[in-house]
Length: 154
Image (cartoon, rainbow, N blue to C red):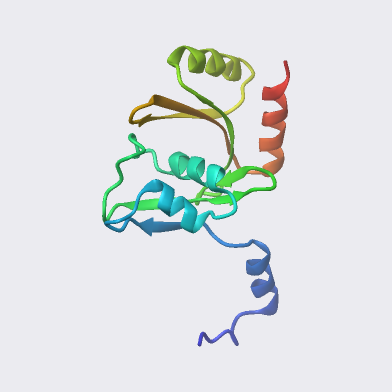
């Protein structure tokens, strides 16, 4: 049992209020992304899947992860659809696209609006490329929400 007698009550309460921290996971031989998502994000599978793709740019083919590979498991909030990386930056999924032309058009608009974003491209065997655009890299949820509101304006 951990000795918490030296932890000041205020510090203990602050740690509780921050919620769980992002973690990492070592891929086992029988694992696939869907299995990992189901185990770690049972109530937010789609968001969890996108979060793993966001946090692990080394994944370029969704069918290939390797035993022993370490994956970052970001926090997800299914109520707000916010993904929080372990560097405490906040992101939201803006969209999934199947063509580079669509992505270029969306990226040009987001750049014009000065909205922070990034694109993750993966291959989905049998389906071709999948482009995910994430808004984010913001330190505060309020800044992320402002960016999302701006990006959603017509």
